[in-house]
Length: 341
Length: 256
Image (cartoon, rainbow over the protein chains, first blue to last red):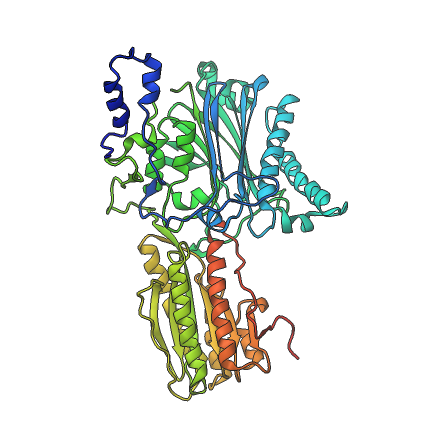
């Protein structure tokens, strides 16, 4: 059978015609039957990477190949995905990126975190998982106690401490320190909290002015990072770095990165405003590297596909694009202001 | 309204949807098409390599090409070049993708001299030009790696090769490579140690091992290193992946 129209399962349509004596199925049943054929294989951008058979990862605790999440909260729409890179699929290694989303209803704030485990450390998959969760919980506690400006050093020290504690627990060494921990649990970490502009600090109110205080589509973003997982605001096809760009050493790539727990004090932080027409992004370098300055094919594709929030699973599929030589884990959180459809 | 991704494809719905770049060919500023790791093998073709040793090098290079070419992910990420030296240095293979049908040069011994300085000079010229070409083609480039193999001692003034070596390792030379140095046969461990970028990356053939046997082990380690280093490229870690080959000792302790 040929599939000329992906929107219509022609075989099903034909069968319906042959059972004319039966009452017509209710509208919702017809909708279910008219399902689209699954498109197989990855999306490709430019030259595709080789197809590899993914081996199931053996990891403790369990690490799924792909995480997809998303939803609406406080006038924001968020999509988030973390996908295992081709190389780890090929070898059967666990995904070493992770993400965390955490709404804080009392302040109508969204907390988002991305971590990229350092592969030289033996359990960096767990490090990434711990770092995002503990960092989000730490921000949540600050918001609970009424903080408007996030105390970032505290957040990153809590996340780093979670790694040290895990090292002590798993190693049975109550005195394990940063050096012992860094050998097995090391990760970058980027955390953001997105809050209504009218409920944020005086600085933002000054910027916003009286008129926009009531604007439900204006948000203040506080973001901080240790390491090379960047944050951007995507406006009209331009990816504007919110944090300081990782320096390119001698014009070459791959110069190493800062990571927790060792560099817990080397926090780079910034604030920005998110309003209609803008999309706030945090990603791991598995995406940042092929994205580069955003003016190439990857940037164009993301700009086009993120013009509006895709469905949650489509978002993960987009992130899992195939492009030759880019086979690292990828993680992306995208946040749109305002009610979307 | 969001556009479901699958709807923008494609006559045959089971085929993978392809995003055609909207301005293909224009190559806008910042367009990157891939990331690559340049790797250079710098090998000794002096007279003393004659017979089994040079045959072992040739065999090892063919194996390396075949293994890398059939690997699903490494082949595209590595660019491999061959420079040899005896009295003079020669580029025997321009930096190339290791595909099955790549024609490799057959190394053979020539001349009596062993000029390290000519090899370093050749690298110093080739590397910036190669990297510039890769960048112009749209590649993001990792710091290059040099595998240096010699079975003898330099037959030239020490100050001459030392000077060329320091130009190659000069921190002001942006594209300076990470150098792994391997001594077999009559190579001088003290010299080999000076060549490597780090003490961890200098290796000398163990006593009692045949030169050809050690070269075979070296070639296998070069392949393993290529695979595991290329695996970690994305993560941006500085450490070059390399395990000591069988039949070698690591020269990371001070030599007396």
